[in-house]
Length: 157
Image (tube, rainbow, N blue to C red):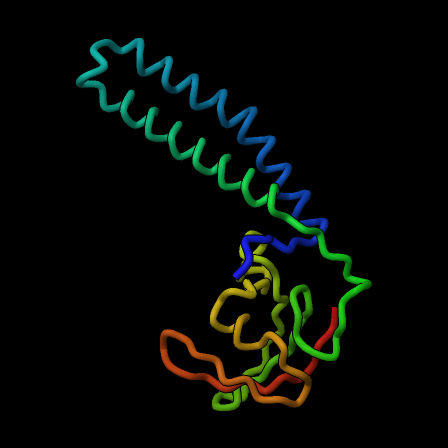
């Protein structure tokens, strides 16, 4: 699979905003925590200092990961998408064949995935299983719990 991240303009803007916040306010907060812990004496036995340095490492890792996502991002123009089959950015109404429960998901990149907003990654088991399917088709999706069949009810933008 390609390293390219396909994003909506909104998703790209949100990631860029988060990155700017982490580079500015996030780094200032971590630097202040390190300075405060440093004032408390011997650094070899200072748990607060170790925790602050760990937090700094995690912050820098997150900043680096977001920079990589943005550097490999391609913004998708919704007007160029084909809704005759399931593709990234499509909203797909599916019905679980066994339980008859219907749900609508939007397929997005990993960076934009948010189950609470019903946005699932195209690389997730369900997202991957739905890609390329057409309305009326059955998608047999391999999940950690086993195979689940979904009927494609509708595809929209």
